[in-house]
Length: 158
Image 1 (cartoon, helix red, strand yellow):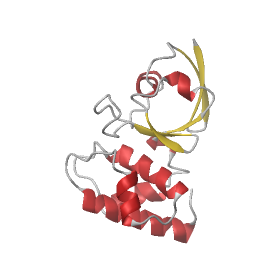
Image 2 (cartoon, one colour; image 1 turned 180 degrees about the vertical axis):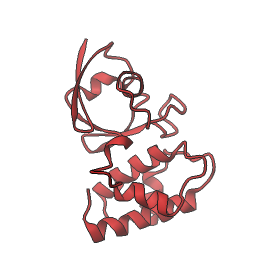
Image 3 (cartoon, helix red, strand yellow; image 1 turned 45 degrees about the horizontal axis):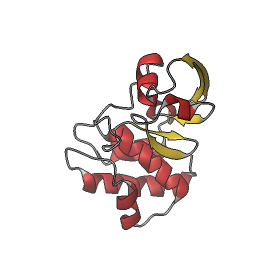
Image 4 (cartoon, one colour; image 1 turned 45 degrees about the vertical axis):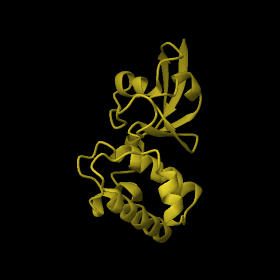
């Protein structure tokens, strides 16, 4: 079946089984490896992408769900050589250790700050609850979200 996708602003037509996971299509058909395979059950958040403005676990999302929708991966956040404020904030505060969870944390944070530009600590914790950091860098992740919030308020959000 032909699936039409818009990924990071580019249109693609993929001929695949509609039940194939979006993560498989992103990684193996399109070569976008920033979204990671973690648990394969949508529980860890390493595979998080944004579809039409909402964060989704791409490992359990059939590619047919994304048909004719806007999909943004970690690779699609950078613009003209400049990192998205959330990406920059995660780097600035060294919010990661092994970095396996980082793309999912960043994508979930982008969705959070788009929907709620000034979340409380409790709202941040609740929104990021489904993203697991095996290294336990949660305090630095919270610092990165706060820094990104300030950066986006000062320079405008994306």
